[in-house]
Image (cartoon, rainbow, N blue to C red; front, side):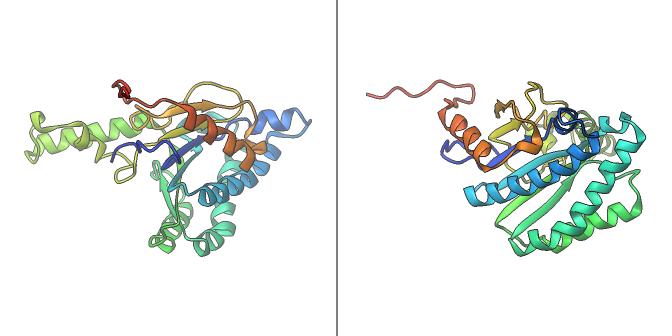
Length: 243
């Protein structure tokens, strides 16, 4: 599925939620405090996306690289994910939000996997907003997994190498069936995408904002959407000349 060419409202917004630790450090608080307050910002972002008529909101909650952080922080982040699912899914469900969690589930505790599966099953028929949570996700690994699946198909004879297309490769990604992001927002002032949706963001508009993630609210979201609407999106072509 391609990128929306209507510049009014992005169909799919992806968000790198950066700056929790720096927000906490600036206030003399432990990093865990920033992560905890960051969950409130997630709730604000979900409500705003729904109110604005955005169809897909993808948030980068835990990357494959985050395992290298101190064990206490990793444990806290995993527990935050558990709490979010347990406490928020019922309300999200009643608001018409469909939850999809992408990323590697191998190696996760079985209780975590069950929480994920139950949340997806409960909200499967909702259509108001697709909330996609990238959890234990890394885009390079995602692309590698897709390539290995295609290689296996070639090996067993169900696919010929010359028949592999971009669409076929995309069909093996975690995001299959979703539109590509129109807009990617990163908070915290950093200007990189950190192994997030590398394939999917080929023609995505990037907006980097200085505020830390715990500060994110509807007003900041609107500012990013206004900037998005000002962009001239040509997708590799040239803008049509008017008479």
